[in-house]
Image (cartoon, rainbow, N blue to C red):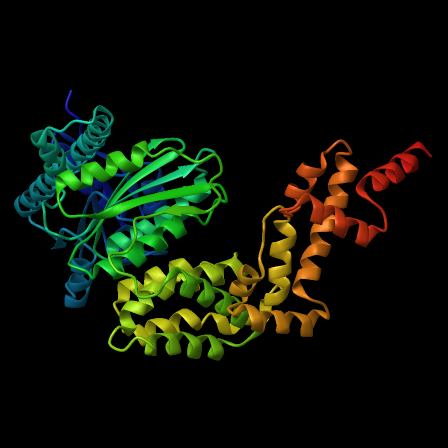
Length: 508
């Protein structure tokens, strides 16, 4: 049995309401009036419970007039057809109705023949909309099926170019436009939480509005595959930075997440190869904020330079001012004549990660994405990125040097060196050594040894049976002999004597 077309009437005059209802039921056997309302607010309440296919609206009604009702329905993306039926012939009313997606505007009193013709056109418009919605639903189902088919291609490791071509044509993915497609896989040790998905999908919607083609599919509850491509040609290094920031942004909501990215890909075969590579990549046992990406096509700054920059930024952000940060970044850019913009793209991830490490509650990566889509000049981007620091600098949780000491205390088993600690402060080793002694009143090596020995004492309390070799290694000492020597110097007794004292204390 064919579904009846549902009419509804919002009209404050009872006689007009009844007359319209009678006309519809007598003229259109395939239609029915499901409800009537005497003002806009009542109509809105009834729409929430039962939405009509065609809504006939009067303009001048109490409580809420017809145009205000149309405005609210337009904002709510009402899927039906709206028809204004009024005694007011004001041009401003008609113009406003057109901007609110009202299908037609007819004046009272209306000739029955004209009313019938208008309602017939409304019915045809509703059928056209319904057909378009059906096609959209069918296409969405098809795309879901094809994505699953694509994942099966990855598993089967097909080399059939026709199958690959068929998949990308079906999902309407642009062919071989040299637009640098990237493939990413997000992996979580636990199932993706709704909060993570909600936050990340908001960022994806923002990028789609900015002209990016993005197709994402949850492979299972712990893996999400994404294919991403800009709508227009873009500097590959600029795009590399954006992909890195997206990977960082996707992982921000979880401490146990890994992102693997492959790109850029310039044709279907390369995209499929990248998909296979990331889908089949073995997951690490611990995924603490790990991003794996191919190297840049070129690199102006060396890894050592980036580590030093990261350390100095950390120091300025914790102990300095936003002006110091701005001047420092611009000085780095100026040291590479003719390549200031390229250096900027290398500096962005370092700056964002350092800022979010100090203020984890802030979302500077999302701010960068917003700026990226505005396509502004580099100087403006830099100023806009640093602007939020004016407020954040007053909420720093510790100084840069305290941050280094905290890092050492959290990693007592690592063989930390003076040069590694200096890099975290953005200093060379000799300057850091003098700076450390001036602030702390002792050498860095003495402080490091003290932290390690304190950790050794903790291990002895928790595990009296630990061997000397295991103890020395666990506390970052490369030599068992040296460990025993400094332990005796600190405690005035050997390790075995220290254990004997512990045993006697327990027996008491």
